[in-house]
Image (cartoon, rainbow, N blue to C red; front, side, top):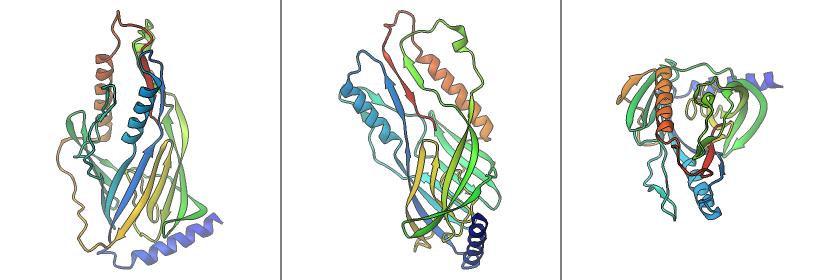
Length: 286
């Protein structure tokens, strides 16, 4: 059955691809959501404050992105928002690094490369690297997302086992806690739903490589769902490759971020003499 579906999908893709291939453009709107787990053990943080903080953090991970695309390239950016910093009734504030207004992911699926402009910790980076092939498995299941018939695809990737980020005033005397350890890895099945009715091998973020636009992604605790598509809009779609920032490849960027994260953790690490038992931990991964 899966083989029949694969043949049908590829046949539909060829038909659609041959129609107006040069002029084909579109705009897709995606809603993202990431589940989080928060465990708090502060003697000063009451249940009301914990509830407020949980709600504020949930909102930080509910975002809207716009994907401008044509047959060969795309730009994926967060929708502009006038949201103010989240401040709780007791004066605490939740702030997150990154997700700046300059962030933009450009992908050229024909040339198999991407340029990711990211505002991280007050500095703009221009990450240039190759698009990695995803070993998608085309499944037989199908469903409708809005008016588009979509087909299921999956692949397996290895990811680190996520542990809670702990911000506690309890100081550890164990030297091994300060030593870097190789992360424990686990397999994760990523599920996508794509539609051959939109004949591009693209999708949100770094998901691509299927015979049709990806409209839905389930990747661990991350969910991305397309809420609107406009094909061949009256105004020409702007697909401009970003050019601002310090140029690095993906590995160099990850090394820089790891170093900066360690510096930040050390800066806010508990000092001797601090009162014990105050703090909280956050699990975001997935």
